Length: 589
Image (cartoon, rainbow, N blue to C red; front, side):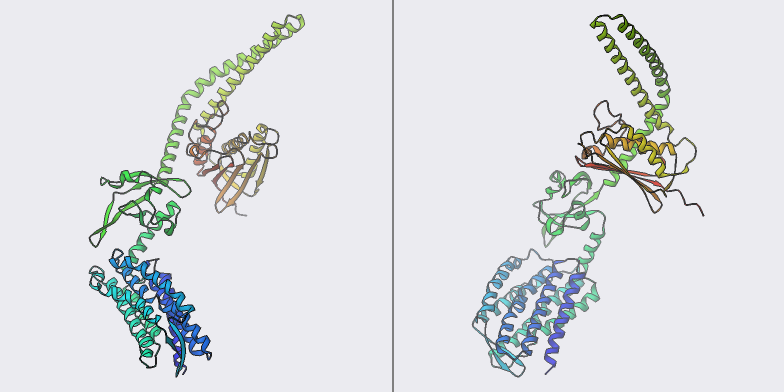
């Protein structure tokens, strides 16, 4: 008497284990998901049969048998649907009938659950209870077997897959095995009671047994449900390049994980959408067979990613065009490297140019500056004489305008000297004595004192410095880098109100690197300008306030020290600059 309930428990356990294994190792393939759902419904059916056998209350048994309709009624259409998916015949004519089958089942289920149309009552038998079927059972059984019979009529077409023996064998096992087990089981569960014979109730166990055969086939032919398709999918998903299949109408039919990562989408959210959602210029290049094309790929958040789009590869199946496949190669790293090379070349050119012109400019500039200093002293002496003599208002205005004009000329000469000094810095980087060990926090503290002088009232500079960080560097050059970054941060705070002007500078260590972080809550940098901030003479500051050399020189110095410098910014939110430098080795104690 205990054999039957134990068989039902074993059936449920086997079905659940097989379904979980398929979902976990099926790489998201549609056929695998459908077979897993099929086995899950079978497990549900077996569990309800177990409880119906164990109960002594006919009312409870009736409710359990009616609830089991949710498990056995969809099995026929699920088996047919899975067979089509496994056979890669998505365009089969029977596929168009699947929605109607699912809809018919969904409409019949409420009648089976809440009325006596399908199961009127239960009768006591030697092994628990047996259901007493109503007239609606004829319709339910018809919906159960109709998809199998309909698909069986074209089984030769469905199984024409000579190029994939393992896939063919699995498709045969799934379709004929599950449908045969379902047919034999339902004959014993439905027809025998109608004819007056006791029902054995072995449908679920037969299906679970077929599932074990499928599992054996998986072990023989591969670790996923359709080994050739899953193997191809696994390879595609491990590629760093994006691979897409675009339908004849321009919709995205399939894509590997690399493409989905590029655009920041999920498979469910991307499939079926027009490819122009990510590549607006795609139609221009889609028909090209002359080679690769350079395009811009727009991500979900609006970022433009430079890519190389391969020439299309026509894909078809069953004599019909399935779409065109393309390979997309992310060029961000290459473009970034090209920009760095361009910046380095520009910096080198500026450095070479500065060697020949800085001395020639400085000599007359300082000569004129010296003369203006003398003129300023003479003008002030003349102004004192005018005050003593007491000449008219016109003389006093001329005196003030003269002093103002001399001051502007001296300021302009000082600015010329400052620019020449900054340009000359390119030729000096890396040409001094060898690197030596210095305390990073001490360098930063000196830079903060220098930058604080240029900070207007209300600007707060907060320092978070680790005193134990030592770096190998040219001390003066690294101080220059930190000063440039702090001055830029201070200048970005010009529009901030009282209490809203903050600059944070921090020093820390991680592994073998020393880290410098400068952050402000200023005006930020436009995204279009971020790509050019290290270019010599490029500046986002107002005319007359910046030379465009501070970050360029800082970049050159950091690179010469074997470090990295990165800038991130949000418009009207602030800017963050991170610098990494080699850390000095710890001295043996």
